Image 1 (tube, rainbow, N blue to C red):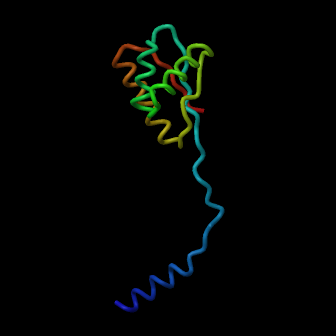
Image 2: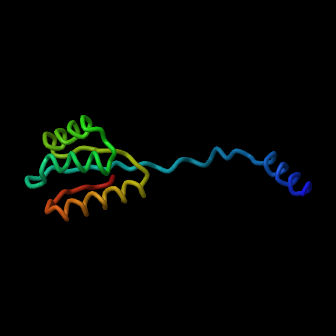
Image 3: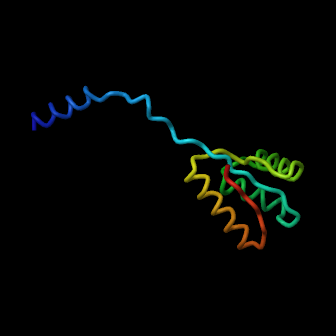
Length: 103
């Protein structure tokens, strides 16, 4: 048991911090305006799936409506893709053609 502890301590002492390891890149999730998706539905998606406050969700929704599109958040690719898929599936189940892209 004592040898195992010494080995673990040696490994801990010999760990070199690798500064070449970078955090994963983040991707922007972009919502696009359309003439059919209800504004209140977009707000609900932003709150429930993208964890926005009600005020932030309303501001983002108005930006989408006014500008034709808006970044709703930046996430690692896997998180961005899963939130996009969940939002699109929810929109389709509710009869909305919400368009979301990841860049």
